Amino acid sequence: MTPAARTNPFLALNYEPAFESLGEDYSDVVAAAAFPAQTLRWRNDDLLPKIGLDPQAVTDEDFIEAFGRFEGRQPLLAMRYHGYQFGEYNAFLGDGRGFLYGQVRGTDGELYDFGTKGSGTTPYSRGGDGRLTLKGGVREVLAAEALNYLGVRTSRCLSMIETGENLWRGDEPSPTRSSVMVRFNRSHIRFGTFERLHYLKRKDLIQKLLDHVIEYYYPHLQGKSDRYALFYAELVQRVAELAAQWMSVGFCHAVLNTDNMSITGESFDYGPYAFMDRYDLRFTAAYFDYSGRYCYGNQPGICQLNLEMLQTPLSAVMAIADMEAGLAKFGDYYYAVYRQRMLNKLGFAELPEAETDELIKRTLQLLEVCEVGYHAFFRELKQQFNASWREDGGILNNADFATTDEQKTCLDRWRQHYHTLLISQPIEEMEHIAQRLNRHNPTTPLIRPEIEAIWAPITEEDNWQPFYDLLAKIRSGN
Ligand SMILES: Nc1ncnc2c1ncn2[C@@H]1O[C@H](COP(=O)(O)OP(=O)(O)OP(=O)(O)O)[C@@H](O)[C@H]1O
Ligand SMILES: [Mg+2]
Image 1 (cartoon, rainbow, N blue to C red):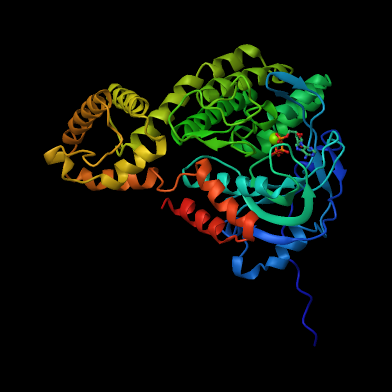
Image 2 (tube, helix red, strand yellow):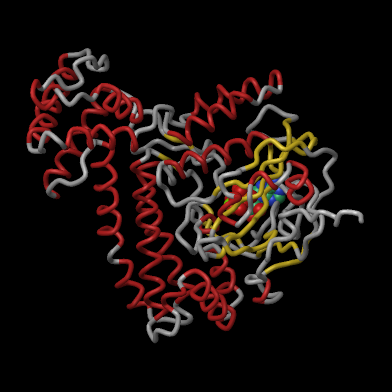
């Protein structure tokens, strides 16, 4: 007897035609580019069990067949959307270098998207090549893994395959290498997906899409008479919390256009992002963001503004007053999470609100006065922390970042304050403080020099080991 032909586990998944079932008003059927080569550079084995696959049973060739050659799966749908880009409405967007490959139910019961980036041109490419640079792929893989470790609600990359083409880009030495990536996230429905329908004056399609979003991503609201208002209120909460997550980990997304805002409140699209080095509210990651519109410190406000702009399309089916009531809570949601996360970074689980605010204020002031790196400071704190600090007050005695008189005075004041807080905690708590400092402050933050350090061996000698080593570090916090 001949053995039965083996099926690629990715092709054997039970794909649900959720977005597809909305019909042809929301997407276009497209084909993937035929690439001259496929070299698997990244397979995210962490994600496979989440979709019921055993990593051992999935070969590299399975990845390449499914996510490099895109064989055996259709329809591939370029999703339609518009969006406000740097405040200007753009009615010529849509998936210009990607498509929705398919949707699968995770073992957690949630629906997930496989969405591509760099898979070829579509009707929305606007003269672009439909491609993703290899460095772009590498950067998105790294950002997603780093943010995931840090507890940010983020998309992940399932695979990244080098595709053997030469690309020309203004922001990379060119020709530069090409890649195709498959993203794994909750949904690629964007604020801009609704904005497009408003632009087309299609109230019917807005309602249909909103019902779809609630059915798949807010199912606990289904059947409630005020489900639309509840949906918006929950989206406000999710987005506010996401902004707080970014701010606490020192992350600047860089392109918070409404087409990069997910309707599930999940973070995605890691283009010119950067983790800042020094604490600086004006830190701007994208070289083309001349006004600093999407600088680090503007992110909560921009998220709030994007939510407000979403009211325009949604007002076709619900009352603006209800949405205003939902949006009014943005600040409370934001600060609750920001406070908690900063407290954790400083080692504490809980302090009265006023004390928390005072500690955060003094810490940020210290970072500014001492000109010490944001991540470097917290790393120093975790590495030097000693339970004996509670008794002897020898906090950060080995810190080398305070040299001027002003810096020394600032550090001394901070030490005294931190010491008072340590004394307010029982001695048994010191161990937990050490654990929290460890968990919330990575030893290797994904700041730009770390990325450039792994990129050099890739371009110079095609050595990928430093990339894998860095991934291991950012996935473990070490
Ligand atoms: N090289 C390219 N060829 C064709 N279209 C492109 C290219 N680069 C970007 N685009 C399109 O420009 C718009 C904005 O790009 P942006 O970088 O925000 O999205 P993206 O990174 O391509 O996709 P995603 O938002 O899913 O991460 C999108 O419509 C995108 O499809
Ligand atoms: Mg985008």
